[in-house]
Length: 121
Image (cartoon, rainbow, N blue to C red; front, top):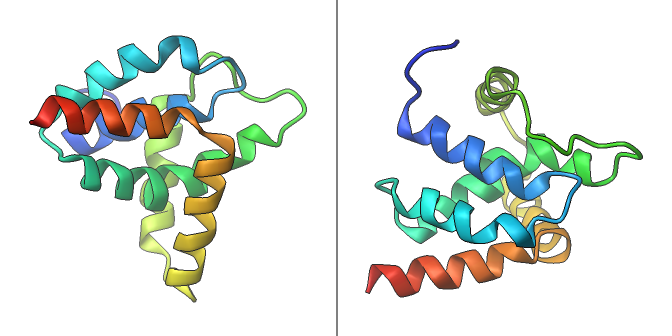
């Protein structure tokens, strides 16, 4: 799967850094800039975070020795694509649960979201 990545895949890779087992706050400005360079509005990025990246990466925040230096892009993209191909039961309940998990475990997203909104205006 190496080679040129779609903009959606690039967003997934950037958003996955929010789930690293490290201090994300220090890299939040760089993540914000990289996300701002993509052609997605903040609501689309938040949907990608909630529906695509969170289900694949959230487990890393619970791992004893989680990934801290970046998820393997091909593995991440493959996992997101495989998950998208599955039919979800109770999708709205799961979305609400993931939104709460993001708010709880990825507080940097609120800051990034606010910065992206500010830069759109």
